[in-house]
Length: 336
Image 1 (tube, one colour):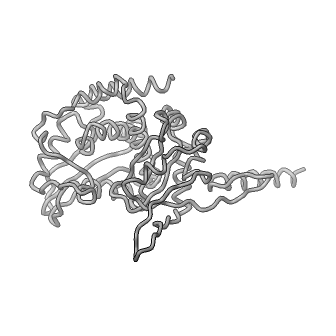
Image 2: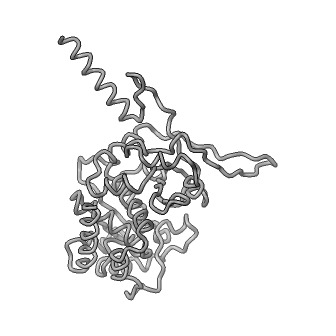
Image 3: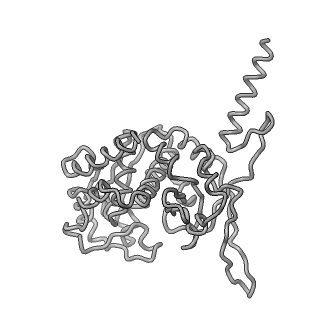
């Protein structure tokens, strides 16, 4: 009896490990799935992945951890590059198994109502590479209630602190005398899962913004800051500016940029890019700082001298109205 119980225990552990690694149970054992891949980015990638397909409705009903990666039954149309008169398809890259497992872990531990919103409205988390941003999304063709999230594996190898520093530096023209240092995690915390959570919730918020495009509460949230009337209202800010073909800000605007971010009703600098980023960044930073209780700080230095320090706005008077609206939205979504 004891031997049988031990064997059963080992079988359950083995089965759990198989499922955690993205394997499927079949006839009492585990069948390894093909390795997950990332797709080479181009401007039409998200639309092609979300193109109308008879298999999407069933894919959207899978348990959340099975929504990591493109459903294998889908046909992905990839554009052809002309090289020497011959067509070739950009080759997908294999995604490290540990990255896939970290995303599975994030989805298994996502709290409500974020988990409920993911189940209802996100059909897949798709990997990409070579993208000029960390994440993007697309609603499914012909389905205004479901979308897919794409994450750039190139940017997921850094720690959360390194990623935040890189992202905020990307707003400005290069200057070796300037340093923007970000902090997103406490010592000893699981680094990549913290970053994946932040990015997943950010893109989930973009999906919700698109799905609920006529929601009066989301519209009310955006009216708090848009159209902008602050001192930099006429200056367009863009993260990953050079990679996206935009104009980076001159270094001399660093202090003014962080002053606006730290005194107006913006959760953090990324929220200043446009009203859609304001909503998505606010949801993800609220999740990060309030729901998870994680740190978030920017320190900007020039010539080795600290010139500005910035923290999230939640709990501060300047973001009181936006926080009220976000919490009302989250409560409503939790009760639906």
